Amino acid sequence: MPDATGLELVAQRVRSAVAEDAVVGTTYEHEQAMLEIAPARVREVLTYLRDEDEQPYEFLASLHGVDYLPEEPRLGVHYQLLSRARLERLGVKTRVTVEDPVVPSVIDLFPTANHQEREVFDMFGVLFDGHPDPRRILMPEDYEGHPQRRDFPVGGEPVLFTFNEHKYPRWYD
Amino acid sequence: MTEPGTDEEAVRAPDPLATPYREREQSVTMERVGHGVRDDGADLQPESELFTINLGPHHPATHGVLRLLCTLEGEQVLDVKPIIGYVHTGIEKSMETQQYWKAITFVERMDYLAYYFNAQAFCMTTERLLEVEVPTRAEYLRVIHTELNRIASHLFWLGTSALDIGAITMMWWALRERDYVLDLFEMSSGQRMHTRYFQVGGVMDDIPPGWEAKCREFLALFPSRIDQYEALLDKNEIWLQRMKHVGVVSKERLLELGVTGPLLRAAGDPWDLRKAMPYSAYADFDFKIPVGTVGDCYDRYRVRMAEMRESCRIVEQALDGLPEGPYITTDRKVALPPRHELATSMEALIHHFKLVTEGFRVPAGEAYCAIESPRGELGCYIRADGSAKPARVHVRDPSFVNLQALPEMSEGGLLADMIANIAMLDPILGGIDR
Image (tube, rainbow over all chains, first blue to last red; front, top):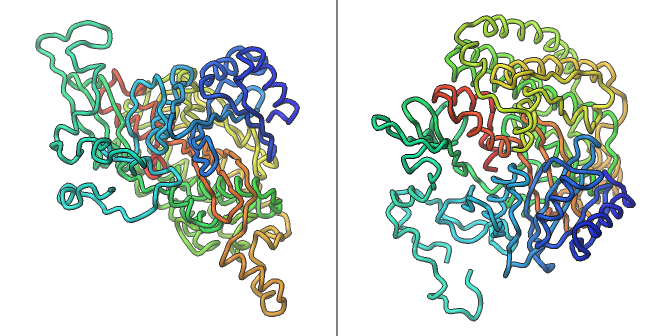
């Protein structure tokens, strides 16, 4: 893990190499470094951290979504980067609003993001711009809503089979 | 679910149920192969025809409810699309309505063969958020149980995989030894599967008298049993022909696809979180990381067999060096007080009551911890909002990520080789769908 000072240095390098507005903030808690970046700059920052930085992070360990309700902007996408050479992890997150939930896809930088971006879209409704196959992955294709959002209610969902799918039409209304 | 102020009828999408079932099936895209042109641009031979079949979701060789949409030219697989979600039960969502100590029960049911690992990833992340110190004895007991669980998980993989290839004896032999491990789990925790033995701050209870002797009995017996499995498989002509040079994917490509665990090590990359970034008590033990050279199915098989031997060594060392001391943290705000204290101490009674009714509160924050599960990097992300329930739990399940490598392993090979690839990939659908 980069320490608190190391994180600031990373942020400083990203600011000077990519853009001044690329880094929104840094948090260092529980010995874990987290860089918050602007959604429009995701591809540039991750390209820089993967290839050009003096301390590169070449492996995307995990990509997942978060709903920060009631904070705004509500939706978050986390990229857990890993440097296998220096044994360091760096969290990168970006936050978007529910009204405009668009984040550039990083699938060409990290092909592992394919299924994980589809899951974040499925569960949170974050649209990944440039994803070649932006379909739902876990929920049924004709499902409406994004169930992992915090304002999506738990329970009360009838189990749909082929024989009774017309018995509960539009149960989600 | 409509926005206020908009016309409800106008924003409605067309009723999905109005579409006939078969048309919905066609929404799966097949652009790459569907137009009579192969990947290399050459036209198909006039006599050859592409054949699209569904493998699964209810097919015994898919190790769960995995559906594979395969496009075949003769017996050659041209394209595979894994379709998942058939056992999606919303565990991550359900955990948001549970107190932390109750959520352990949920998280164990994700990867149902490696339940100790799920629980450990979740507990480690919660401990990091709480900044609770785990006693050394608890860490050792965790290592012992996770390594036994790794053996049990690999044994189940061995039995079912060999069954897919047609070696039926392995199923009985491997499950016989797995039962021995489950007996140990039952003795230490009362449950054979989904034991809920790991708690935030330590483990549920100390190992009972006689457990260590029984465990050592197993450790003495088990290496000779691995010898027996290998005697049965390693010189078996059918097994070797089905395994060798099948499903080779380069190390670099596996890393791009995010693949970790035995699959990556079989390709020659000695990446193991237990060694690379030691967590729990792994820094105390001497063990080796088996790696392969070719990265085919045979290497994947060999790596897992060698890992079982190494796990045995780790458990042995942990039993030898098992320190005395508490098995769970003495922080009364996190762990239940011992039962006998309740009769004499009012404070203990209050703590017990508060923990059981409300659970402990976790200060707001976010954390991500990763451990090495039998299938690769098992990461757990928790966002705490200061209440007694997590605001978001995400488990980065290695099966979910590793499954992306299946098309690369299988395309261009025979349909029968794809079955071998699935077997050696070792996907657990409970973990993939969560």
